[in-house]
Length: 158
Image 1: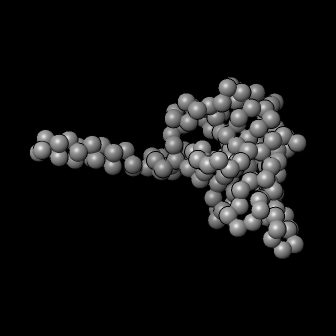
Image 2: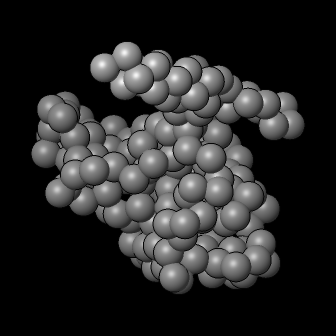
Image 3: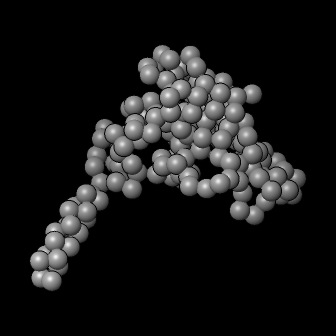
């Protein structure tokens, strides 16, 4: 019994030690965000292999209706530009006058090109989209992980 407790404590120490944040460049990354090496294992077969391929195949406008907790859906239109800028327009359906909310900023690919990060403003955080194929992006959670749900989180090329 004592041996099991010692092993449990040792495992706990290892796990907690792995939870420390690491620093890369100017960005501090908490281990809640999956390391790039882990995400690369889930890279879609149609995902780009080089930065130039990314620009050639993934620039354009993608749209879809994403799930909404208190409305029928969020009409989402994301335009990715080759210069690294984006425009993200969202419309909460069934909410008042359904005015579009637009965010603009810069997008950056992950190191392994498996997903892109949209830099919202400092208050709004970031958004992540996995590159499924040249016609499909899938929204990821705030830690760049796939959203486990039967709901649709995909945007398709317009």
